[in-house]
Image 1 (tube, one colour):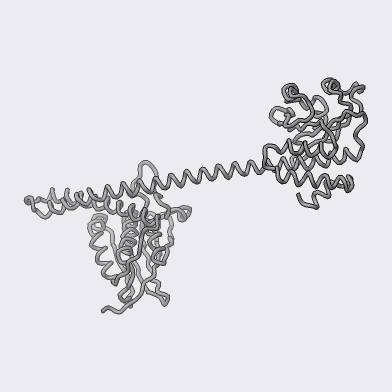
Image 2 (image 1 turned 30 degrees about the vertical axis):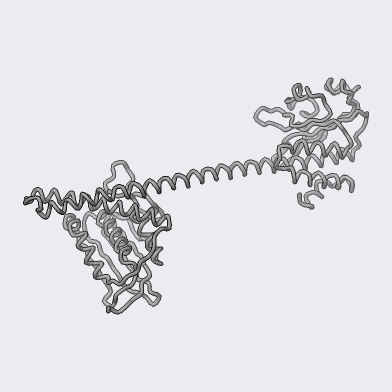
Length: 430
C-alpha cells in the first residue's frame, strides 16, 4: 500500500499505530489473493491488541446479511449458530448501519447488549469497526476482551484504521479475482477460437484437396467429349458440355482459392519469380474469361503502360490475383465494362494496377471486412452471387507476400475500383 495513503489512514494513531498498520498492510499485500486473507487479517489485529477473541464478517448485499468469514477464540459451534446475522441485529449490524465504531465497555451489565452468548463466554468488552472500501461498508471486524473497559480511544482509532486497510485490500482482492476470471474466460475463449480456426483450416485444406482431383478428372473428360473422341458432338450436346466445363472450371477455381488461402494463412507459401510481360498475362486472362464476358455482354479492356518492360516476379501468383479481381468484377457487373490498368514499375520497383467495374458497388461500411475470409457481399440465404468469400482474402495475402497491398474505392450503384501494387524487377527482354 502506498505510503501516502497509509499515512492518511493512520493519521491520529501515533507511531506505534503506524507501525502496526504498516505490518498489517505488508501482510495483506502478500495474502490479498489468498482465500485465507480473512484469517490473516484477524490474526494480525488480535496480535496487535494482544487479544484472543474476534470475528470478521462480510456484507452480502443480495441477502442483506453479514456472513462470518473468520473467527477466533470462540467454540467450534460458533459458526453454526452465528454464521449469518441480519444487519439489524447485534453489534456488527449496528456497525454497518452507523458506518462507524461501536463499543461496549461492560457487556455483563449493559442491558442494551443482547449478546447472551458472549456473556456465557465471559466477554466483558467488545468493539466493532466497519471494513470500508471505495464502494462503502463491505463488512465488519469485531474484537472482544474478558476485561471490563479494555479499549481506549486511541485503540479504537487504530482498529478503525485497520478496518479501512482490510476493507480496501478485500475489495482489491475481489477486483483482482474478477479480472483473473475475465482473463481466464478470455484465454479459454481464445483457445477455443484458435482450436476452431485450426479445425476449420484443416477441414478446408482436406476438403479442398479431396475436391480438386475429381473436379480435374471431370474437366478432363469434358474436354475429351468435346474433342469428339467418343463420337461426334452436336450443338445441343456441345452447349451442355460447355455449361459443365464452365461450372467445373468455376468450382476448381474456388477449390484452388481455398487451398491457396489455407497455405497462405499457415505461412507455407514461397515466392518463385520468373520473367514475364503483362501483355502475356492479359492474353491468358482474356482467353480465360472470353465465354463469361460474351455471355453477359460486357466489355473487358486492358490499359497497359506503353513503357512497361519485361517484369521479374511470381507470375503464377499474379495471374491468380488478376483472375480473382476480374472474376469478382464480372460477377457483380450486369452491364457496362471492366477495365484493367497497369503502369510502372516506379523507381522503387512498384507496379501500380487497378481493376475497375461498373457493377453494383460496395457500401462504405463493408470496406474494412471484404478482405476477411469467408466474407460474402451477399450473405442472405437467397444469395444471387456464388463464391466462398475467399478470393479477396487470397488477393490481399498474396500481394502482401509480393511486397505490395490493395485498397478499394466504391459507391453503391456506381461500381468499384480495386487499386493494388506489387514489387517487380524491370528487365529488358532477352
